[in-house]
Image (cartoon, rainbow, N blue to C red; front, side, top):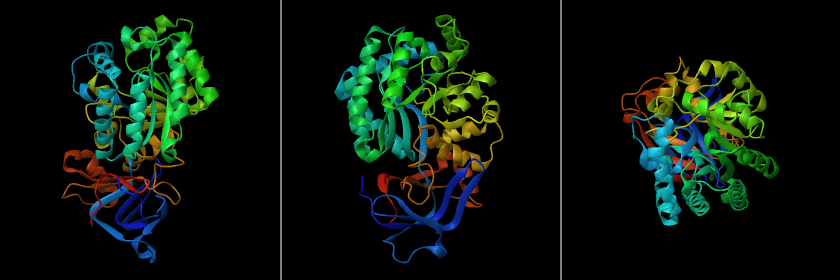
Amino acid sequence: MSRPRDMLLRGAVLSPHAIDRVESYEDGFVRIDDDGRVASIGDWHDAPNDAGPIVHVGDALILPAFVDAHVHLPQIDVRARYGLPLMAWLEQHVFPAEAAFADPEHAERVAERFFHALAANGIGTAGVFATVHLEATHKAFEVAANSGLRIVMGKVLMDVNAPPDLIEPADRGIAASLELAERWEGAAGGRLHTAITPRFVPTSSAELLSHAGRAASQAGLRVQTHLAEQPEEVEIVSRLFPDSTDYLAVYDERGLVGERSVFAHAIHCTDDAFARLASSGSAIACCPTSNAFLGSGSFPLQHAKRADVTIGIGSDVGAGPLFSPLDVLRHFAYLDHIEPCELLYRGTLAGAEALSVDHQTGRLAVDKAADLVVLEPPADASGDPLQRFVQCVFRNPETRVVATLVEGRVVFGRLPT
């Protein structure tokens, strides 16, 4: 990982301003200062004369580094285990893989592969689930710090309805999460954040969820969990919490729904639940590749958009078989007719908003961190920069991540010389 340096990137530049607005320069520049921030951006004719070395990226695109709003570190090796619904898939594949993280050395080796895979796919920021193991999660944070990436991560909390070696009393799990926050919240120059991370309601007692809500509120921490992924799961929740009006209410009644909460999937939500998510300031991590792989259903995008919920995208590795945000965006586009501007927004700024890091990253703008990806489109791609980006989405195998930068440091690949 190289150190940031004052330099001028020259090439086709794209940056989202909103869901329907993008800044685009066919021959543009991004100046990165030696603090790893964007000093200026614009058309090449307006480039400063006093900048550091000029790096011309050729036919590649310069855009904000991608944001994966929902991904599981320990599931990198259970990808493409096809044919089972969610609950059976967890029991047969995921829980055994996560149990192996009782060995901190194994945990460290997997974490190194995992964070490399994120960077190699142009991802600069991710919302990550670790495992229930405290030492393994410390190891994961250490590797994340060394990777240079911007990471929101939490130790998974489970105290019921899971294998005995993966559950722990509610108070112990919360205490361990707060220990992690004491060490890692805001670490690595503000690149690392901790999140209270109950896996989902079926593996959480009422006591655990209540403790988790109080801890997040009192410590000012983010929350990440799953919501209404499959009908079987929703039915389990209704049996476990018959006095709650719906799945979301189980979380809301225990203080887990708020401005820095991210709920993965949310496929089987009512319009009322989407409205409550929006009014609370919570966000959704939409995971279309995972949903298709597990047969979970199709995310009701138009219903969620009408409620004006913040929606980022997530690979949900390992139910999502690939880390590539381009692959996720392609499947997201198949949910409905998606405008090109929205595809760029969902893969970058929307994810940063969902993870509450949009003050730092998600678009290329003065004083934001220089988190960006240099993306080489298919050889015969044509049209303006946004059209060429869309061709990257739909022709992902013909697209190459040249380099990924976070705070002006190259965390994957290399810049042209």
